[in-house]
Amino acid sequence: MAPSGDRILPYTHVLLRLPSGVLKIIRILPDTSVYLGKFGTFPSNALLHRPYNLTFDILDNNEGLRVVPAEELTRDILGGGFGEAEQGNADETHYDLSYNTTEGEAPKEGVMRTNRNTVDNAASQTLTWEQIEELKKTAGNSGKDIIQKLLSSHVAIDQKTAFSLQKYTLRKASKFMKRFSVHRLSVSALTDYLHDSKEPFKFLEIRNHHLGLMMSLGNIVHGGRYLVVDETGGLLVAALAERLGVLNSTTPGPATAPVEDDETTEGPDSKKRKLDPAPATRNTITLIHANEQPNLSLLTHFNYDANTPPVTHPLYTHLKTLTWLQLLAPDEDTTMLPPDPHTPEELAALKPGKRSAYYRKLRRWQKVSATVADARNGGYDAVLVAAHMSVPGILKAVVPLVKGSGQIVVYSPSLEQATELADLYSSARRTAWIQRKEAAKNEEKAEEQAPVERDWDDETPDPTLMLAPTVHRETVRAYQVLPGRTHPVMTSKGGAEGYVFHGTRVLPVAGKVDAKGAFASQKKKRRTEVSVDAMVPESEAATPVESS
Image 1 (tube, helix red, strand yellow):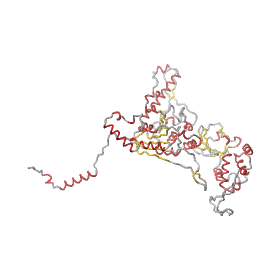
Image 2 (cartoon, one colour):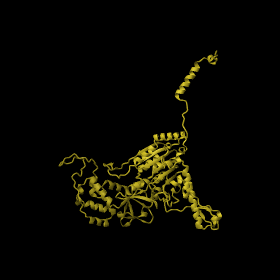
Image 3 (cartoon, one colour):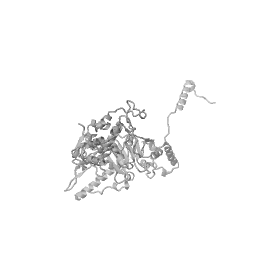
Image 4 (cartoon, helix red, strand yellow):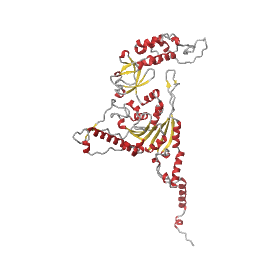
């Protein structure tokens, strides 16, 4: 029996692949019906506790689902699964499409026939659209009867080659078959779904190979502390959480209220106070955002709502959020002000509603203050950035928060933005920066001696904090893999290519570096002097010379 993690559980989101190739995300709610448009309707309970990656046929009259065997799927894809007319051509397994015959000459033995002289038009299909619409209402067998009727009513079906017949059959199957497959909703599947169904520019047109490269360059491992600037709707945070193992909840379901503490308030009508779980200290993700609330809408597909997060979800304790104002100028943020203090007697005299509101504000202030203090202390293992805003200003603020040998990874849709970052941290910029600081020190300009990392108004980052800036470009091309027809897919969706900037955080030494030690020439000179002294007789070396 497969483990529970490999089975479809209630209240989880799954990815459905329809016969037309369209992807659809649904949430499995018990005791409900799932509507798939023209493909039909089925009860959601028919999917519960079944393994992923199975293909189902929707039975007629809402009778449920039928699991399609792997043998039947293979036969339908490679040919021979929808009628006897296809069986004869499906046995042609010689896929040499070259033909060396002239007109009127019989094809050579062993060479497959082609559709060179085949003329196909709309008149080849004898069924009218009225008859096809009537078949949709009356035909059963999950759409197979319609496909069989279309094949038998085609007058030029015997003129088709094995390839053209298979394409024709699959095209009709994608239109009339009531079939779908169920897949686990991973970050990779969600990224493909967003590119096919949504507007890619909203999440910077980031793709799976970009996310994988960022996770690899950032050295994302379990137990680390990572700083994230994500303006893709939570896609980068989801990829990071999936790598850390805190993305999926072990007990999916409706939102759970915080647990209650045993500690009670003083007073005659004392009640138990709700206490949030303690935040994690390792294996954490700290998100910096520009708005009042972070945009993590894509995390709802993994049962995590940032507005009302469930306590049972791992991200409740492993994901921390703060604003740029709280990071750079916490004294100017009104949410950092603590609630008015009250004595135990005053709290006991308050009404239950006001007392609960006071404790709620107190817990919120304690949580935000701890997150801000932890972020400003730094020591992160890596920082990952995918943002619409100016990246040089972001790096100026977050690079000092990364510990030594930590990784800085930035995704950029265009090459110009990535090369700009590489230029800001180049060796020429680093040399000019050091020379400027030395000149300012010699001229005793006090205003230029202030630490650069505290000058938040200047967007020019300190190039001495990062080494080996590199721009990576990665391209992945999809392939069609079929017997005798393996080739790259000729059509693909355009958009930004995407580039990944990567660098290593270093700790520059304070002050001027002076080289000390014995060089090779000095060692050789000293060795020569010692050998000359050894050649002088001891009596001469010990006798002083008197001057007259």
